[in-house]
Amino acid sequence: MGYPDRPGWLRYIQRTPYSDGVLYGSPTIENVGKPTIIEITAYNRRTFETARHNLIINIMSAEDFPLPYQAEFFIKNMNVEEMLASEVLGDFLGAVKNVWQPERLNAINITSALDRGGRVPLPINDMKEGVYVMVGADVPFSSCLREVENPQNQLRCSQEMEPVITCDKKFRTQFHIDWCKISLVDHTKQVSTYQEVIRGEGILPDGGEYKPPSDTLKSRDYYSDFLITLAVPSAIALVLFLILAYIMCCRREGVEKRNMQTPDLQLVHHSAIQKSTKELRDMSKNREIAWPLSTLPVFHPVTGEIVPPLHTDSYDNTSMPLMQTQQNLPHQTQIPQQQTAGKWYP
Image (cartoon, rainbow, N blue to C red; front, side, top):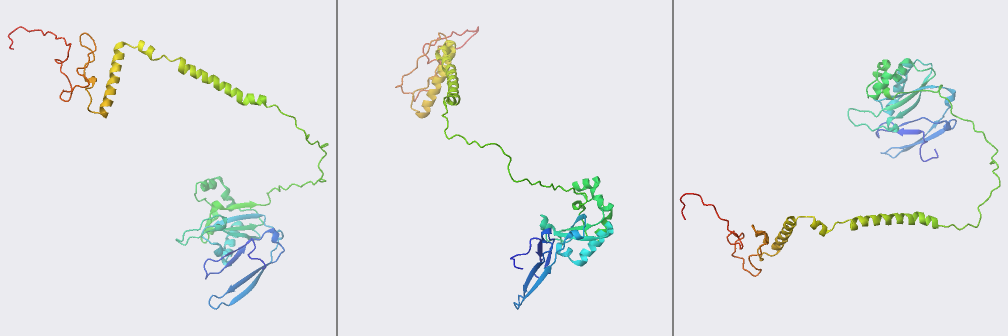
């Protein structure tokens, strides 16, 4: 009442427009002793008749009913509004009391799994979202509840396997409990970490007389900084450039020295290959050119002299075959053939 929304600790859920709405939650210590008035307004959709009701919630301190041993169970086959029903919650507390055997047992908090980051279940096979129920008692935990802390059960939980709990059969008929998600809290063994704050006089210790910096600043010489940051790297780069220039320019052998160390026959052969390549490239541009010299012999087979071309550039070579026979070559030396004994015919 007097606010645009519910208190932060109070939740409301209603599955369908025709199902009951449920208010649930656990108040904090700041709300103790303050009556909370919930103003409920409803109207009839057919007749638009309006009704208003005030719900007064009186919050009492939990210190009057100490429950230092608290256990939180996760029930997989229940929704929060189903668990809040008095008969269902009474059956669950009865099963826990049968296992725990406390003198006083109360439900401390009931929370939906969706409020803990759970996922909305698929609408198949009547799947439930699950609910967390925290109960408190005044006696230590029973041996059955301590079984979840065994190394064997912890290993099975880490492997996503169902742990072996002897008292699970007392819940299995109505409640499916995930024993890997159960948490046991013993407030009697918790050590208080509160440290008393020693308040002083609020005066800082005397650190001497304050001396502000001088108004006049001395000039600074940046010549040495210039030498270090600019001159030195430039000098190193210049030396490296000179070394590279000497290697690239002064250490080269040159074409003349290479030709002097190369045999003449290899040089002529290399020159002929270059000329042939050039002629083939020229032929690809213009087909009406003279014969390529690559089709003619370069040296005389006997004397070793260079053979001149058979024709000039103005000679008509359209009717000339591509390859010349050895008889048409000038300066060709006839090699005598050895005559065999016997009769021969012209």
